[in-house]
Image 1 (cartoon, rainbow, N blue to C red):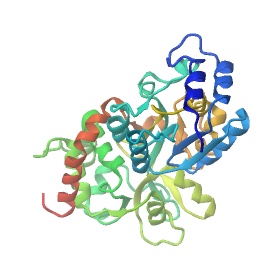
Image 2: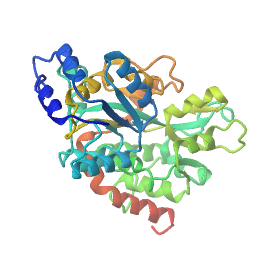
Image 3: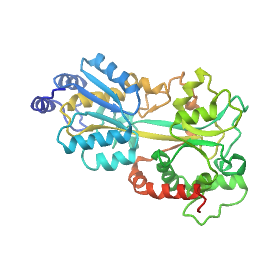
Image 4: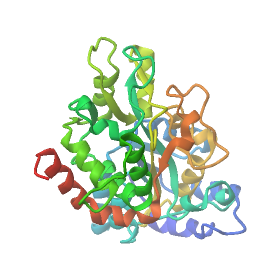
Length: 368
């Protein structure tokens, strides 16, 4: 791909770099974007290919969408920036703590919020810009149970469920250790209250928090750890299974119910039915297509642009964009029962990852 940096710098002056510019003009942005080199966008979902193709067709701007894991995405941007050879333009990353520390704090990427979207995006998602939140939900097998057999997360630490909880390995999927820290910082009283509701007595622990006590008890109950949400879905919802598993997984996996999977949301689970984790959408600081990048950010915040991901239950941060009625999990009915990730403390999540990993590993090995 041939880039013309001088031309890009010239046309970039046509549109203000301020996310809050009062004279935001979508037509001027489109005109400036069309004068720039082709656009490259990256996300951890394969749907980005479809979204990039639709954007290209809509605006006549050559655009390539590439699926890439969050860690590889961060490594790519870091390497390109250090080599002064930036090829990426827009990156969408679900590892919010790592992106905050390794990309935004270093200046390798910038956050851009189109001014006409300001009132549509909740304040906590504006800077850095969060494009979406994705549900992960406690799930059960609907063929083996009339309803979820568990109504409290502490029940998963009881002997009855030993070895029968399925979840991605927190040592390999950092969103879970990040969530442990989010629980401790923002929801610890809820975790403690759930303990008392389940056992009928207040929690007493030598650990630092109710969350730490729960994490240690869960790890010690030897959950089935997987490499992916797909493996969790298979363990929980396989139509021919005879074993009851409770799992936590992306609501996107419920699309497999049309292929015979038997997944249902544990809608009575306390203190939360699941969690919502965010994705940052950022523009690389070295892009030579700054206006095309801004236009793509704007497009992804619209109902049209986000639609391919919305059908999987991913939730646009634009309050005007609703979850489609045909979304297969039914998570829209339980949004107020999901713990929401607080991006403001993502750097704390980053700093504490090793501590939570150590706690998990020690408890799983029976060394606590």
